[in-house]
Length: 122
Length: 384
Image 1: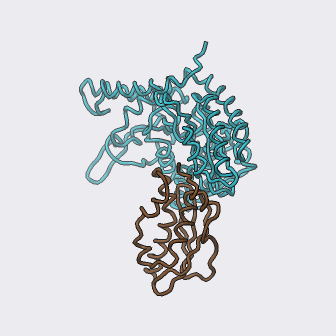
Image 2: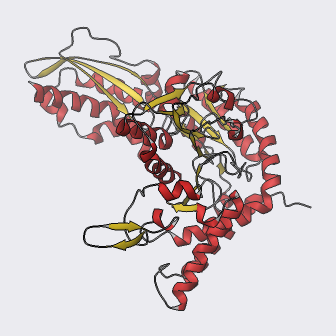
Image 3: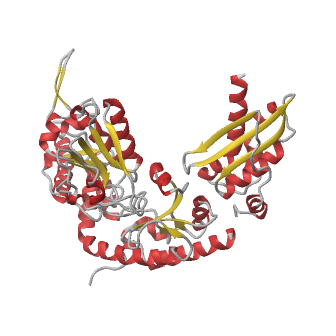
């Protein structure tokens, strides 16, 4: 069963969801399959992520994945987050089909793209 | 007495699956699979080339398919172009009409068009400097009258689907007052229900949405239009003469069929037409009845965007994402589509991000709808 209780719990009560005014990075990414959109807000200091917030409307999988990820990355180094293995995210879920893997990885990919784009623009 | 369990004709449905994603593609009857198998086993050779008997057999099979299609849609054989599918047909249609456009001319389409109409004609407008006029929906539906109110002397192309692949409404294209415009009809969803589009100049459809194979479609048109139009693809079979510096084109339809065609799929399309013709009057009546029942079931759980009686039903469940609905339904062996169904402008206009879509075929039955009902009840339970 994909919708295990901890997934539904994160979906119903997402952590780290909301606005972050004057964030160091604000980045938007979408999943063209369904049009789901996620906005990433990150504050950083000394190469570490100090605050991470997201705004998104989406399916239970992408919302739960975002909630778990954004809770986790606060305090982690930018380098570690850019290098984060997708299996770390997927391990939280039961068996996901190819299309649902895209839902689960949307938040991680968005965060990575946000950090890489930010570094490139510096 | 007419046969009632048509599922038996479709090998894939033997598993007991409730297949309700027929707007995406339909399943194929054994008659189609056998016709294609037979072609590869007994008639396979390249067409219009070899001088040996086998090659002639293959050419005959291909051209016979064209004859079957022509008769079915009320056209001459040289007015039928085989393509890889409706998307290819619509891209070809846009290319064919490029030479007719000047700056400030207008291309009319509706907000409900599938991306396969929307994008080729939007890009055509960009290339030529023509204006793209997008007709909006009226109470989640569209009519010939609504379209007519946007047609002017400047309208050169009207490109519309006769049946929306999301909302399922049907437009009587015969009532479109096109003036001097060329009317392009995307009949991908409607071809099962209606084969004659007398008012249309170009008609596009795929075989795979009407019980035929994937990889083949049709652009039906008229000889005058074909004569002046430029091809989309260049290659073998489509030329009259090639010199080092210049090429002249073969006559239509060859001019628009560059390269080796999908002959087996053309044979499959003809077999699908022959098969469906036997069942069509039952199919239309049965689908209508089923559509009403489906509406009744779905509206217990969701807001249905389609009108009552539509064979394509798109809906939204409160606080549940379409992917999650489809996922739970899948665990009940019910196949539905979730997302934007290649219609982003339409979803923007409906002010919803995505929808769930149930689309019917004539082999569906009440058992499929019972499974849908059980599945939707479970969605409500999980996400309530």
